[in-house]
Amino acid sequence: MPTTIDREQSLVARFVQAFEMNDGHTLNGTNARLHGLRKDAIGHVARLGFPGRKDEAWKYTNIGKVLKRAYALPMGHTGGDATRAEVDRLRVPGLDAYELVLADGRFREDLSALGGLPEGVFVTGFARAAEVHADLVDAHAGQYAKASEEVFTALNTAFAQDGAFVYVPENVVLDRPIHVMHLVRGEDTATMIQPRLLIVAERGAQLRLVQTSEALGANPVFLNAVTEVYVGHSAHVDLYEIQDDHAHASAVNTLHAYQAGPSVFRTSTFTFSGEVIRNNVTVHPDAEGCEAHLYGLFLGDGAMHVDNHTLVDHAVPACFSNELYKGVLDDRATGVFNGKVFVRQDAQQTNAYQSNKSILLSETAQMYSKPELEIYADDVQCSHGATTGQLDREGLFYLRSRGLSEAQARALMLTAFAGDVLETVRLPALRDHLDALVAARFGA
Image 1: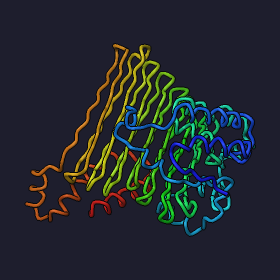
Image 2 (image 1 turned 30 degrees about the horizontal axis):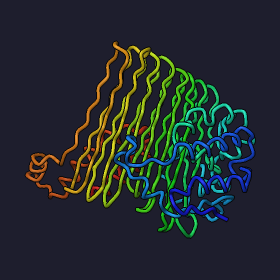
Image 3 (image 1 turned 90 degrees about the horizontal axis):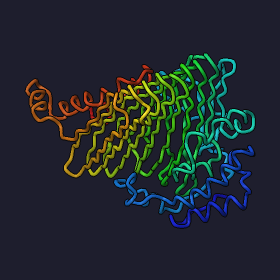
């Protein structure tokens, strides 16, 4: 039976009660270390509490209106209602990929397609990995996304029942991308799903991973997902996330990437729909020669709210980071970008760039942008910038003078505006799919 969350103020008490009733054994396997992490995480939830508008990091995002709903926690649920037809709808046309299916956060091996993986590569559910590959899970789970530092990470750590686990050993180049498909059916009421993703790319490994999701039905859904990524020496990891659920789907997506050696990490987030979406991205380059690239494109309409919150923590010399986030907001939609580049005293010769550009298509749309540089080293090249405005009227006039209608001219200009981010996608089939989504959104 699902555990029901009545009000925001009773969340912690009900989590503690559910854990004690089950002694934690129904949650993501019986791995002893994870069991301890879960018990500690519940305490961190109680200690940290949920953020309000007075918390600087949540100043522009009212997550309280989402948390006040009575959510069902599908404890012990197996995701058994998912169907092959639903999986087929989540496929990206032309994308030849290994497929891992999560139904209500649970790994569904019968719906996944993981045959033909190179020797030594593990792609499976998180709960199974905690039992079969306990050494890898113990070495990395909870090491980068700290439950003691952030309440939604603590919440996920305490109650993540399953998710995805990807391990690529030394010098293995994955020939095809991995496509993680989230199917969220939930209960006959509002449902909270908390998947956990752990990605480990050892020295010289290369992998590309795509995440897509579909919230089925009209009931509210809250997805609280945590992804941890370990990037080894000379490894290359590309992550793509497409957020395109219904208007009552909300999410807090937390991503922590740790670069253990000189390596390249890229992450791109594309947000097309949802109610309240918060994306937390933290990257820690911890060796000289690291590269980190963070990209985002968000298209908001209706009363949609999208908040992208990033942190790149430069702690060692001679690293490079680049951020580019773009948004287009219409109707009463709200966008937030809060990006911080932290350059510590020893991180000399750091190159860090950060840019946020947004277009407002209505007088009621709002954008809050706060790019930040905090620098304690003197031999660095760092810059940031933000612009928010409307479509260029002279540009519209020029295009219309060449025979385009106003709608065609707007669509052409908006598609070109989004192009900088779309061009960073390094999978041709995924790029074509995103081009089509953007074109359809703008009426191109």
